[in-house]
Image 1: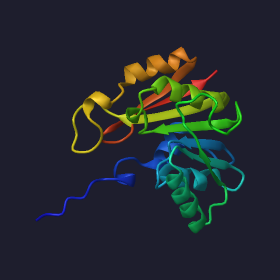
Image 2: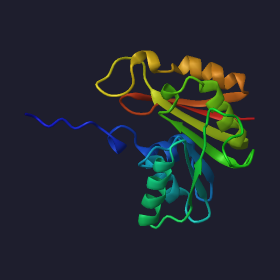
Image 3: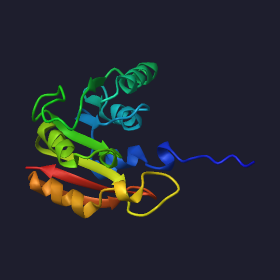
Image 4: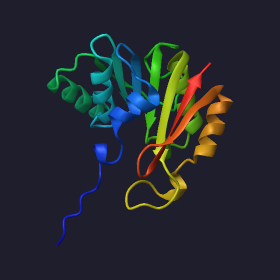
Length: 187
């Protein structure tokens, strides 16, 4: 029987390219990965990019996920990672100050929620004026991996939700074989 490997990590999304070249993340920035997941894939790469003068928040609703991210960061000697437990669907629940972050990430999480607008509103609250929110989610269609087509959010719907919160589209791009990305700016 053939062993079939599901793609993950850089096989699906190139975190370094997306963070540096699409989002514009730089040394000394403050960023949060909202819904960071147990591997903390973007948290770890962001931590390396922002360096000792930056801060990376890994935010998730699962405490076990946050424990894994903390352990991984410590193992790699990354002292600029902080984890925050939060329900992103609740406005004001994330224990990060309003208008504090330069950047926020929502990577592959909206398909898991019934409250996309709530999550985007919470991300927007955390951003400084002129801050940037990068959302990456699944392209339409049926693929061998990923969520069911009916659970995916279209770029058009996402843009409509973001614009209702006074976010503006700065850039749209393909984020890999199965994903699209949009960077929004906060006024």
